[in-house]
Length: 247
Length: 214
Image 1 (tube, chains in turn green, red):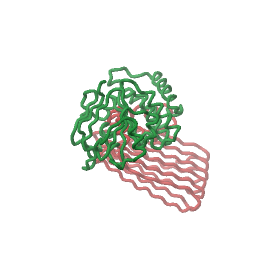
Image 2 (cartoon, helix red, strand yellow; image 1 turned 90 degrees about the vertical axis):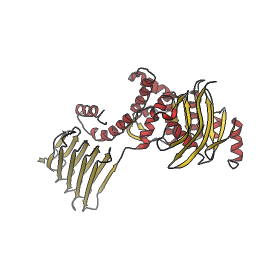
Image 3 (cartoon, helix red, strand yellow; image 1 turned 90 degrees about the horizontal axis):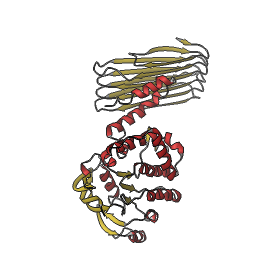
Image 4 (cartoon, chains in turn green, orange; image 1 turned 120 degrees about the vertical axis):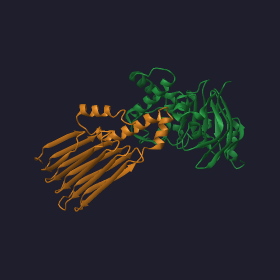
């Protein structure tokens, strides 16, 4: 088992307030880790810090992606190196078409990997193939990024982008929120299809429901900025039953 | 000048040092003006002043005014529009956009008048401005005088900066920050450029804006 992501004693704050208070976590290739916990525990802060969101400040600790120091990398370089965040609230970008956005993103990643850019024809064929997997409509290409999308379409669009970019580390931040059961199934199936022995995912969720579809190898409880308990998938069921009150 | 009954007057002005138009529209005529200031000198600090005055004197006229200015250095552009609906049943649409970088200055004065007899007029005036630097300055003075009661009129003006959350979203997909800025600025400008009817001119301008953000 090769470690993909190593987090050592990570502390982070926003606006001077400490949110992460010493997170330790090792994620190996091929693993699915669920992070659960009460609201305000720091779940979304962890995803923001791993992706380099400038609103957060890392005060101490280390993070390595395949041995590379992640924290010194610009957000776009982390993305090209394979860190992908499925946003809890995907951003609408009026006037920037999905096609233009996705093609720019994919070709930046390919350049980083020393690959040639895809031709328009190859790119469109790839879009078609991945959209079918997420049951997304063809008209998506000409629409602006996330503009006017329903809640379910936005979340599907996140997983679609993940399918296009094939990250080594996918962080799904509350991907289940706002999804009805059919959309949840499609999104989860998409995530499962993208699983390989070399990549890994972090599934951040408040509820156990998503974990019926995306079965985790490990479940961690994040409370007050620290991982306070780690178990297997049965821990999620236990939390569903007893709540987070003990933490 | 006068646009005769039922006639169409359509003009695109690109990088003119100043556009001054005084137009009277007869019944059923259509006027469409597009003004684009994209390549003003970065060093000389050119001052451009556009003044568009249009009066709808006959019933059922349509007036469209679209303007885009992208300013650098100490450039300064003032765009003034005076649209008067003297009689009813007409429509007017105005979309005025400024992108301001460095120490540039933009000014929009928009005067929209709907006379007492101009019932069933539909008039929309929108001014949107994007500030790319802390030292750029935009002044907006919309002025509406509506004397008829059976009209549909809207106006809106806003000045803001690039959406940080959109920039981060694009960076998270591997797009570098500079390129992300460019995509957002281009998206903002395209709304005006897309109103140009002549495909060749439109495509040329759309191509030229790739790479203007530094």
